[in-house]
Amino acid sequence: MRLADVERFVGMPYDADAFDCADLVAKVQLELFGRHVSMPSRRPRGVRGSGQLGELSRPYAKHREGPPEDGDLVLMFDHGQRNPGHAGVFFFLAHEQWVLHSNESNGCAVLHRLRDLQGFGLRVEGIYEWV
Image (cartoon, rainbow, N blue to C red; front, side, top):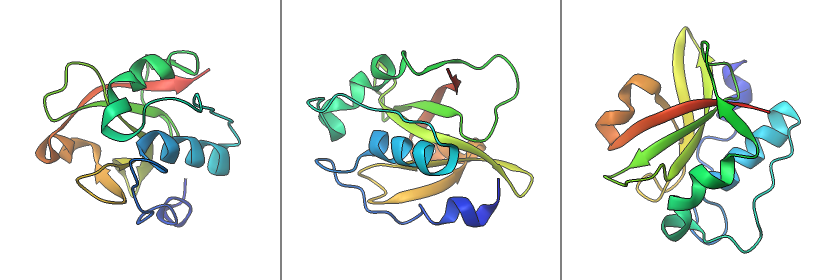
């Protein structure tokens, strides 16, 4: 994947009621990979719905056994949650592993090195390939 393809998503505003991390994942999957990921229209959104992301992703993705690939789903624990409540998209860019994600604390979509996520209060639960 080219950095220019991913950078166009960086800075997209986070809005708990209209465009949360799950919406970003769905948008990236559709626009970069042609995958249609639909979330229930009445799902809880933002922080309220974050605890359901792991369960909502099950029909779409399974745990990746080998090395991650561009576009894989990254589920994370956010600030001491018990269930994965934050989602992002994996990319291998400039010889590094990156995660594109959006949350309330960032206020917009950002790229973080996978290895640096813990410093931002996020712990990776797993990397999943799309089915």
